[in-house]
View 1 (tube, helix red, strand yellow):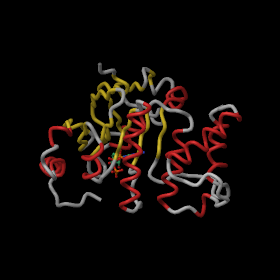
View 2 (spheres, rainbow, N blue to C red):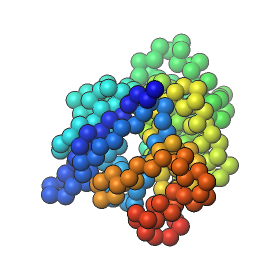
View 3 (tube, rainbow, N blue to C red):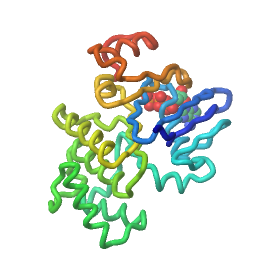
Length: 246
Ligand SMILES: Nc1ncnc2c1ncn2[C@@H]1O[C@H](COP(=O)(O)OP(=O)(O)OP(=O)(O)O)[C@@H](O)[C@H]1O
């Protein structure tokens, strides 16, 4: 049975006379991996910011886990983990120290926090007892630590913005497998915003194509399964252009 966990209704954001997000209606179901695709300036980030309650809509509504993000931004952020493209850490602290810091901010009891942090480091494939400071981590290690940092508060929804950029191909594959496992084992709902069409096609159940502030189409990725570049062809039908969407 499907159960909507993210619901946008006529969601609109204007900056002066400019409409960045234009009457978007969308329903993402619990346990779905939903892709957000579109060219620069399509309104993807603004939509995500409204989901997180970090910017207010001009009109329309956004609900996540049944909570109105605009009216109750703090409650929403307790349920939603957000991994931005460039994660910020305390660079002079180790991975586990960073996780414990986030755990304290989220009022996770100290005793549980250490066990949880160690479990998560293992889960994302980072060494548990290293003295290496986060400032010395490679890009791929930072993304893995970012994912652990998002997961420590046990969110119901995670929003990943270009999570694989700068990671080598083997690392990308591991990262994607991990996301899928998290959905399967924990019933996590994932919003995956990326310009990498092949990754989106590989991991997502459905994809929303954003353009000019509008949700132009919702694509069921299963229906493209037999087409090697199915999503890319579909993207090009809407937005034109060549192979790269970096
Ligand atoms: N604070 C702001 N003030 C004015 N205009 C803004 C503001 N934030 C975003 N915009 C405009 O709104 C439009 C949508 O921006 P948004 O960042 O949501 O696009 P995006 O799809 O996330 O793009 P990208 O792929 O480049 O991240 C853009 O034209 C942008 O210039």
